[in-house]
Length: 232
Image (tube, rainbow, N blue to C red; front, side, top):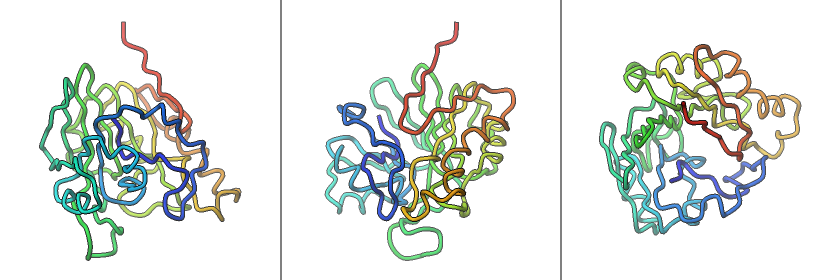
């Protein structure tokens, strides 16, 4: 399974500042979950590399993606679930723009952004992009939460978590393990080497870890494995 995959060296004008994943890490994937339609989450060149897989998008986004040539597209609305073998996937709310071209436009593809709760032997929350919202506490407790802690720019627009707000999300969702994501991966080429951008690429995950209480935080560099030790 992949969530919001970015498998190429570029995303539009953004460059990947960490090494791309080896194809062996996503070979054989048969399920792809998309949280929303922004280009760094629903990335068409990356999806074409796994177009044989079952691609699940927020309800309302399926027709647009099928017109782009993807044959195995399904929709999942907030509160709805699907099964994939022993895995149950439930779409949950996200406080984030669901418009393909960003929060300020009203024309073009639109579907509400979602997060996903995955349940098999463990219960895992994959937030996608979101800010805090009423009802987030209803998602917990979970075994693992993957929470966004920054983005690709010098500032954050609406509908995002920064490290401190992501720590507040931990208090609500109550995971046993929290993993900071959505940081340190993409940047505009002209800014990637500036001192401020270098800090923003390196620090958010560690700032999140320093702010979290009563939860184990696993900070892993983007593109590396998150190792989960089973409880005794």
